[in-house]
Image (tube, rainbow, N blue to C red; front, side, top):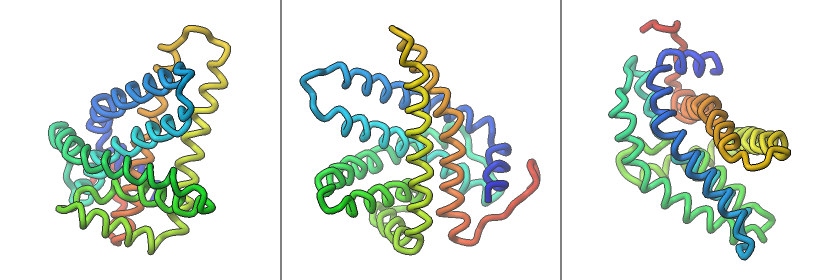
Length: 225
């Protein structure tokens, strides 16, 4: 499957780079600036929870166009930049509202040994990869079905995604901690890391939960049909 991910990335490199510039860069920059601003407000006592929400939103909102790339690739087709942007805009509302509601539920159910919190994050990991379905009900139903069928695999994917995200974030903060007044340096590094890593993660998860799950994955030579 890893080979298929790299081949899909190679076949659609230009549109992936375009979507990364138009979607990942501005959302990452906005979220990063918001997080830095939060930690400058001394009166605010819940910066960590809000920052966690912003990082989650950053990760989830950017996923749909890359799902579209994978689904089109399975049909030996490519998407245009316009189609990718329109698909992103169309899914923006449902994804954001769902993330807000479920994240709040996850926060207020932590006292239940974190079990609902983990399940909600597992669901949110899967949910963006069903946003091409016609109705919100179908999105929820298919995401819930995948959660029930592949719970152990999703836990592994969740650990990998969260560990890599926080490892990269923590490493960057540690590396930059001795540099004062270097906001643009922080911003540049964070945006660059997201542009490099997120498309691979999105394509992997799209292949994992849609193509591989449905037995539709085929490995073709780069540039082949």
